[in-house]
Image 1 (spheres, helix red, strand yellow):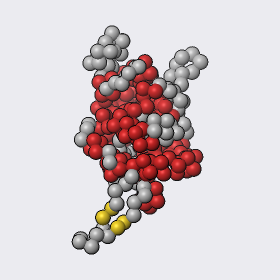
Image 2 (cartoon, helix red, strand yellow):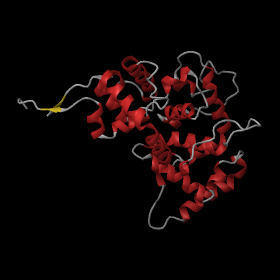
Image 3 (cartoon, helix red, strand yellow):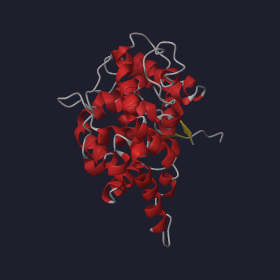
Image 4 (spheres, helix red, strand yellow):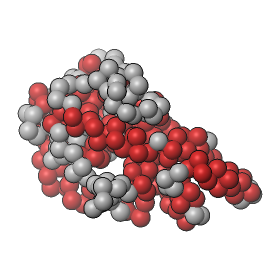
Length: 287
């Protein structure tokens, strides 16, 4: 059996139309799967110009957990919820983490002492230094991410996430360690969620808002997006944006400001692919 080639314009239009109908229900499921207790984050400043440290740390940790590979969003959410239940989240979100060094070590002691017959959340606790890094430099990272709005031209996301190496940011006052490798493709997730939470509407961020999950890249490759498999992951999102814009039109390319979310859902559902992508199994008698 062989698969007929996919017509990208037709397939993307079908996905867009399906998403227009399914969007509300699918986004509710996405929110409940992704965010602690299913609550949207508070990412805009309060009346005094302060940030909600808990919401921002959730966003950056969920972004950073993209480097873990096969773990599912629900597992990341449950880890954060577990930290909140145990009181660890109050330690993680303290604005002066260095001042609470003993409390941070206390979290590790509690985790180790409570391991009896299973090592629950060990993958996540192995990222304890990253949790501390994000907490310690949270204000700088928020400033860095909000500052992406200032860019008025195409930019290299990997370079921008290295504030000390980016010539456009030298003298900008951000001295935090690089964020790119900490987030990996989670950087695109973070940008997408900042747009979805209406924290930014910069048109120059749109091309960086597609999280290039393996299945999404594979789906687009099968549609004819040949370049998607040959670039580094942080360079994949602009290629996705260009490909979808070319076949669906730039106004519709963001799938109603949800970017890669509908593509994720389709890429993980074979029956949905069959109904939307316009391809049927055919049989070659020579095989």
